[in-house]
Image (cartoon, rainbow, N blue to C red; front, side):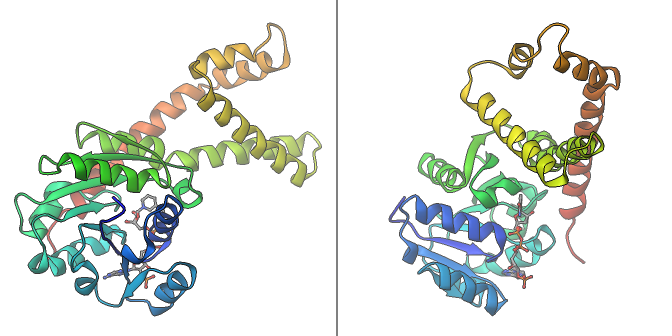
Length: 277
Ligand SMILES: NC(=O)c1ccc[n+]([C@@H]2O[C@H](COP(=O)([O-])OP(=O)(O)OC[C@H]3O[C@@H](n4cnc5c(N)ncnc54)[C@H](OP(=O)(O)O)[C@@H]3O)[C@@H](O)[C@H]2O)c1
Protein backbone atom coordinates (compact mmCIF):
# COMPACT_ATOMS: atom_id res chain seq x y z
CA UNK A 1 0.00 0.00 0.00
CA UNK A 2 2.87 2.36 0.85
CA UNK A 3 4.10 2.27 -2.76
CA UNK A 4 0.82 3.12 -4.39
CA UNK A 5 -0.20 6.62 -5.43
CA UNK A 6 -3.54 8.02 -4.36
CA UNK A 7 -5.29 11.03 -5.93
CA UNK A 8 -7.96 12.95 -4.06
CA UNK A 9 -10.40 14.86 -6.23
CA UNK A 10 -11.62 17.61 -3.90
CA UNK A 11 -9.48 18.92 -1.07
CA UNK A 12 -12.18 19.69 1.52
CA UNK A 13 -12.94 18.34 4.99
CA UNK A 14 -13.06 14.63 4.20
CA UNK A 15 -9.95 14.68 2.01
CA UNK A 16 -8.07 16.50 4.76
CA UNK A 17 -9.06 13.95 7.41
CA UNK A 18 -8.19 10.97 5.15
CA UNK A 19 -4.84 12.53 4.20
CA UNK A 20 -4.08 13.13 7.90
CA UNK A 21 -5.11 9.56 8.75
CA UNK A 22 -3.06 7.99 5.96
CA UNK A 23 0.07 9.96 6.84
CA UNK A 24 -0.37 9.09 10.54
CA UNK A 25 -0.55 5.43 9.43
CA UNK A 26 2.83 5.77 7.69
CA UNK A 27 1.69 6.43 4.11
CA UNK A 28 4.25 8.41 2.06
CA UNK A 29 2.90 11.97 1.81
CA UNK A 30 4.65 12.56 -1.55
CA UNK A 31 2.50 9.76 -3.02
CA UNK A 32 -0.68 11.68 -2.27
CA UNK A 33 -2.09 13.97 -4.97
CA UNK A 34 -4.92 16.43 -4.36
CA UNK A 35 -6.83 18.57 -6.82
CA UNK A 36 -9.25 21.35 -5.97
CA UNK A 37 -10.35 24.47 -7.86
CA UNK A 38 -9.86 26.56 -4.75
CA UNK A 39 -6.16 27.61 -4.37
CA UNK A 40 -6.60 28.41 -0.67
CA UNK A 41 -7.78 24.82 0.02
CA UNK A 42 -4.66 23.48 -1.71
CA UNK A 43 -2.38 25.95 0.06
CA UNK A 44 -3.80 25.06 3.46
CA UNK A 45 -3.32 21.32 2.73
CA UNK A 46 0.24 21.69 1.49
CA UNK A 47 1.04 23.90 4.51
CA UNK A 48 0.04 20.94 6.71
CA UNK A 49 1.44 18.00 4.70
CA UNK A 50 4.18 17.56 2.04
CA UNK A 51 1.68 16.27 -0.54
CA UNK A 52 1.41 17.14 -4.26
CA UNK A 53 -1.33 19.59 -5.19
CA UNK A 54 -2.96 20.22 -8.57
CA UNK A 55 -5.41 22.78 -9.87
CA UNK A 56 -6.78 20.36 -12.46
CA UNK A 57 -8.25 16.92 -11.84
CA UNK A 58 -6.83 15.16 -14.89
CA UNK A 59 -3.20 15.99 -13.98
CA UNK A 60 -3.87 14.83 -10.40
CA UNK A 61 -4.94 11.30 -11.43
CA UNK A 62 -2.01 10.67 -13.80
CA UNK A 63 -0.02 7.58 -12.71
CA UNK A 64 -2.22 7.04 -9.63
CA UNK A 65 -3.41 3.54 -8.61
CA UNK A 66 -6.35 4.92 -6.60
CA UNK A 67 -8.62 7.90 -7.20
CA UNK A 68 -10.80 9.06 -4.30
CA UNK A 69 -13.77 11.23 -5.18
CA UNK A 70 -14.08 13.57 -2.19
CA UNK A 71 -16.39 16.12 -3.77
CA UNK A 72 -20.05 16.96 -3.11
CA UNK A 73 -22.52 14.46 -4.62
CA UNK A 74 -23.91 17.18 -6.93
CA UNK A 75 -20.43 17.66 -8.49
CA UNK A 76 -19.74 13.97 -9.03
CA UNK A 77 -21.32 13.48 -12.45
CA UNK A 78 -19.44 16.41 -14.05
CA UNK A 79 -16.13 15.33 -12.52
CA UNK A 80 -16.46 11.63 -13.46
CA UNK A 81 -17.35 12.56 -17.06
CA UNK A 82 -14.31 14.87 -17.15
CA UNK A 83 -12.03 12.05 -15.94
CA UNK A 84 -13.56 9.35 -18.19
CA UNK A 85 -11.37 9.85 -21.32
CA UNK A 86 -8.22 9.70 -19.15
CA UNK A 87 -9.20 6.64 -17.05
CA UNK A 88 -6.64 3.82 -16.81
CA UNK A 89 -8.21 0.35 -16.59
CA UNK A 90 -6.33 -0.86 -13.52
CA UNK A 91 -7.16 2.22 -11.41
CA UNK A 92 -9.37 1.79 -8.34
CA UNK A 93 -12.04 4.44 -7.90
CA UNK A 94 -13.33 5.09 -4.38
CA UNK A 95 -16.35 7.35 -4.05
CA UNK A 96 -17.17 8.75 -0.62
CA UNK A 97 -19.99 10.90 -2.01
CA UNK A 98 -23.24 10.22 -0.21
CA UNK A 99 -26.00 8.70 -2.32
CA UNK A 100 -24.31 8.02 -5.68
CA UNK A 101 -24.70 4.39 -6.84
CA UNK A 102 -21.96 2.34 -8.53
CA UNK A 103 -23.98 1.74 -11.71
CA UNK A 104 -24.32 5.51 -12.21
CA UNK A 105 -20.58 6.09 -11.66
CA UNK A 106 -19.70 3.28 -14.15
CA UNK A 107 -22.06 4.76 -16.73
CA UNK A 108 -20.53 8.25 -16.39
CA UNK A 109 -17.04 6.72 -16.54
CA UNK A 110 -18.09 4.86 -19.72
CA UNK A 111 -16.32 1.73 -18.45
CA UNK A 112 -18.32 -1.46 -17.83
CA UNK A 113 -15.53 -3.13 -15.88
CA UNK A 114 -14.03 -0.30 -13.79
CA UNK A 115 -13.11 -1.30 -10.22
CA UNK A 116 -15.23 0.91 -7.97
CA UNK A 117 -15.75 1.02 -4.22
CA UNK A 118 -18.53 3.05 -2.66
CA UNK A 119 -17.81 4.20 0.88
CA UNK A 120 -20.27 5.73 3.32
CA UNK A 121 -18.24 7.44 6.05
CA UNK A 122 -19.67 9.69 8.75
CA UNK A 123 -18.78 13.05 10.29
CA UNK A 124 -16.69 11.72 13.22
CA UNK A 125 -14.18 10.66 10.52
CA UNK A 126 -13.08 14.28 10.78
CA UNK A 127 -11.72 13.46 14.29
CA UNK A 128 -10.44 9.97 13.33
CA UNK A 129 -13.41 8.29 15.05
CA UNK A 130 -15.50 7.57 11.97
CA UNK A 131 -17.67 4.60 11.07
CA UNK A 132 -17.61 3.68 7.39
CA UNK A 133 -19.38 0.98 5.40
CA UNK A 134 -17.87 -0.07 2.08
CA UNK A 135 -19.31 -1.84 -0.93
CA UNK A 136 -17.22 -3.04 -3.87
CA UNK A 137 -18.31 -4.03 -7.36
CA UNK A 138 -17.23 -7.35 -8.89
CA UNK A 139 -14.20 -5.83 -10.64
CA UNK A 140 -12.42 -4.88 -7.41
CA UNK A 141 -9.50 -7.27 -6.82
CA UNK A 142 -8.41 -8.59 -3.43
CA UNK A 143 -5.46 -6.19 -3.12
CA UNK A 144 -7.75 -3.28 -4.04
CA UNK A 145 -10.26 -4.38 -1.36
CA UNK A 146 -7.46 -4.26 1.21
CA UNK A 147 -6.31 -0.88 -0.06
CA UNK A 148 -9.79 0.68 0.12
CA UNK A 149 -10.29 -0.73 3.61
CA UNK A 150 -6.97 0.64 4.87
CA UNK A 151 -7.74 4.11 3.46
CA UNK A 152 -11.04 4.32 5.34
CA UNK A 153 -9.67 2.56 8.43
CA UNK A 154 -7.19 5.42 8.74
CA UNK A 155 -10.12 7.54 10.04
CA UNK A 156 -11.96 4.93 12.12
CA UNK A 157 -13.92 1.71 11.77
CA UNK A 158 -14.39 0.33 8.22
CA UNK A 159 -16.74 -2.59 7.48
CA UNK A 160 -17.86 -4.20 4.20
CA UNK A 161 -21.49 -4.78 3.23
CA UNK A 162 -22.37 -7.46 0.67
CA UNK A 163 -25.22 -5.65 -1.09
CA UNK A 164 -25.28 -2.03 -2.25
CA UNK A 165 -28.87 -1.54 -1.10
CA UNK A 166 -27.63 -1.99 2.49
CA UNK A 167 -25.88 1.37 2.12
CA UNK A 168 -29.32 2.98 2.63
CA UNK A 169 -29.57 1.32 6.07
CA UNK A 170 -25.97 2.34 6.82
CA UNK A 171 -26.79 5.93 5.86
CA UNK A 172 -29.78 5.85 8.23
CA UNK A 173 -27.71 4.37 11.08
CA UNK A 174 -24.10 5.62 11.08
CA UNK A 175 -24.38 8.32 8.39
CA UNK A 176 -27.23 10.20 10.09
CA UNK A 177 -26.49 8.72 13.54
CA UNK A 178 -24.20 11.49 14.81
CA UNK A 179 -27.10 13.96 14.48
CA UNK A 180 -29.42 11.66 16.46
CA UNK A 181 -26.85 11.42 19.26
CA UNK A 182 -26.33 15.21 19.18
CA UNK A 183 -30.11 15.66 19.54
CA UNK A 184 -30.19 13.26 22.50
CA UNK A 185 -27.27 15.14 24.09
CA UNK A 186 -28.99 18.48 23.47
CA UNK A 187 -32.22 17.22 25.07
CA UNK A 188 -30.40 15.75 28.10
CA UNK A 189 -28.36 18.93 28.61
CA UNK A 190 -31.46 21.13 28.48
CA UNK A 191 -33.28 18.88 30.94
CA UNK A 192 -30.31 19.03 33.34
CA UNK A 193 -30.25 22.85 33.09
CA UNK A 194 -33.97 22.85 33.95
CA UNK A 195 -33.06 20.79 37.03
CA UNK A 196 -30.64 23.55 38.11
CA UNK A 197 -27.20 22.69 36.64
CA UNK A 198 -25.05 25.42 35.07
CA UNK A 199 -25.03 25.04 31.24
CA UNK A 200 -21.28 24.32 31.05
CA UNK A 201 -21.44 21.67 33.76
CA UNK A 202 -24.48 20.08 32.06
CA UNK A 203 -22.68 20.12 28.70
CA UNK A 204 -19.46 18.54 29.97
CA UNK A 205 -21.16 15.87 32.07
CA UNK A 206 -23.44 14.98 29.18
CA UNK A 207 -20.63 14.74 26.60
CA UNK A 208 -18.40 12.68 28.88
CA UNK A 209 -21.32 10.36 29.68
CA UNK A 210 -21.99 9.82 25.96
CA UNK A 211 -18.28 9.22 25.30
CA UNK A 212 -17.87 6.92 28.31
CA UNK A 213 -20.96 4.87 27.42
CA UNK A 214 -19.75 4.41 23.82
CA UNK A 215 -16.26 3.45 25.08
CA UNK A 216 -17.72 0.93 27.54
CA UNK A 217 -19.95 -0.58 24.85
CA UNK A 218 -17.04 -0.82 22.40
CA UNK A 219 -14.73 -2.42 24.96
CA UNK A 220 -17.31 -4.85 26.33
CA UNK A 221 -18.39 -8.19 24.85
CA UNK A 222 -21.93 -7.57 26.10
CA UNK A 223 -24.73 -6.25 23.92
CA UNK A 224 -26.24 -2.82 24.69
CA UNK A 225 -29.35 -4.34 26.29
CA UNK A 226 -27.18 -6.24 28.84
CA UNK A 227 -25.09 -3.17 29.62
CA UNK A 228 -28.31 -1.21 30.19
CA UNK A 229 -29.67 -3.89 32.53
CA UNK A 230 -26.37 -3.95 34.45
CA UNK A 231 -26.65 -0.24 35.28
CA UNK A 232 -30.37 -0.40 36.15
CA UNK A 233 -30.94 -1.30 39.80
CA UNK A 234 -34.48 -2.38 40.69
CA UNK A 235 -36.34 0.54 42.23
CA UNK A 236 -33.50 2.97 41.50
CA UNK A 237 -33.19 6.29 39.67
CA UNK A 238 -32.16 4.84 36.28
CA UNK A 239 -35.12 2.46 36.24
CA UNK A 240 -37.49 5.39 36.89
CA UNK A 241 -35.91 7.45 34.09
CA UNK A 242 -35.90 4.56 31.60
CA UNK A 243 -39.56 3.89 32.36
CA UNK A 244 -40.40 7.41 31.11
CA UNK A 245 -38.40 6.84 27.88
CA UNK A 246 -40.09 3.47 27.21
CA UNK A 247 -43.51 4.99 28.00
CA UNK A 248 -42.82 7.73 25.44
CA UNK A 249 -41.98 4.99 22.88
CA UNK A 250 -38.35 5.96 22.32
CA UNK A 251 -37.79 2.67 20.47
CA UNK A 252 -40.69 3.38 18.10
CA UNK A 253 -39.36 6.88 17.46
CA UNK A 254 -35.92 5.56 16.49
CA UNK A 255 -37.48 2.90 14.28
CA UNK A 256 -39.47 5.59 12.45
CA UNK A 257 -36.39 7.83 12.19
CA UNK A 258 -34.20 5.13 10.61
CA UNK A 259 -36.92 3.99 8.20
CA UNK A 260 -37.50 7.60 7.09
CA UNK A 261 -33.77 8.28 6.65
CA UNK A 262 -33.25 5.04 4.65
CA UNK A 263 -36.16 5.95 2.37
CA UNK A 264 -34.72 9.40 1.81
CA UNK A 265 -31.33 7.85 1.00
CA UNK A 266 -32.99 5.72 -1.70
CA UNK A 267 -34.86 8.75 -3.10
CA UNK A 268 -31.64 10.82 -3.25
CA UNK A 269 -29.74 8.01 -5.01
CA UNK A 270 -32.37 7.95 -7.76
CA UNK A 271 -32.38 11.74 -8.05
CA UNK A 272 -28.56 12.14 -8.03
CA UNK A 273 -28.14 9.29 -10.54
CA UNK A 274 -30.19 11.04 -13.25
CA UNK A 275 -28.08 12.10 -16.21
CA UNK A 276 -27.67 15.86 -16.63
CA UNK A 277 -29.32 17.23 -19.72
N1 LIG B 1 -17.97 15.71 5.88
C1 LIG B 1 -18.44 14.55 6.31
O1 LIG B 1 -18.50 14.27 7.49
C2 LIG B 1 -18.91 13.50 5.32
C3 LIG B 1 -19.48 12.32 5.80
C4 LIG B 1 -19.89 11.35 4.89
C5 LIG B 1 -19.74 11.56 3.54
N2 LIG B 1 -19.21 12.73 3.11
C6 LIG B 1 -19.08 12.93 1.66
O2 LIG B 1 -17.75 13.33 1.37
C7 LIG B 1 -17.77 14.20 0.25
C8 LIG B 1 -16.90 15.39 0.57
O3 LIG B 1 -17.43 16.05 1.71
P1 LIG B 1 -16.64 17.22 2.42
O4 LIG B 1 -17.33 17.46 3.70
O5 LIG B 1 -15.20 16.96 2.39
O6 LIG B 1 -16.97 18.42 1.40
P2 LIG B 1 -16.16 19.79 1.19
O7 LIG B 1 -15.44 20.16 2.44
O8 LIG B 1 -17.11 20.75 0.57
O9 LIG B 1 -15.06 19.37 0.11
C9 LIG B 1 -15.31 19.27 -1.26
C10 LIG B 1 -14.15 19.96 -1.97
O10 LIG B 1 -14.26 19.72 -3.37
C11 LIG B 1 -13.93 20.94 -4.03
N3 LIG B 1 -14.46 20.93 -5.39
C12 LIG B 1 -15.58 21.53 -5.88
N4 LIG B 1 -15.71 21.27 -7.20
C13 LIG B 1 -14.64 20.52 -7.56
C14 LIG B 1 -14.21 19.96 -8.79
N5 LIG B 1 -14.91 20.13 -9.92
N6 LIG B 1 -13.07 19.25 -8.81
C15 LIG B 1 -12.34 19.09 -7.67
N7 LIG B 1 -12.71 19.58 -6.48
C16 LIG B 1 -13.85 20.29 -6.42
C17 LIG B 1 -14.54 21.98 -3.15
O11 LIG B 1 -14.02 23.26 -3.45
P3 LIG B 1 -14.90 24.56 -3.04
O12 LIG B 1 -14.79 24.67 -1.57
O13 LIG B 1 -14.24 25.66 -3.78
O14 LIG B 1 -16.30 24.27 -3.52
C18 LIG B 1 -14.16 21.48 -1.77
O15 LIG B 1 -12.88 21.90 -1.41
C19 LIG B 1 -19.22 14.57 -0.02
O16 LIG B 1 -19.66 13.89 -1.18
C20 LIG B 1 -19.98 14.06 1.17
O17 LIG B 1 -21.23 13.50 0.79
C21 LIG B 1 -18.79 13.71 3.96
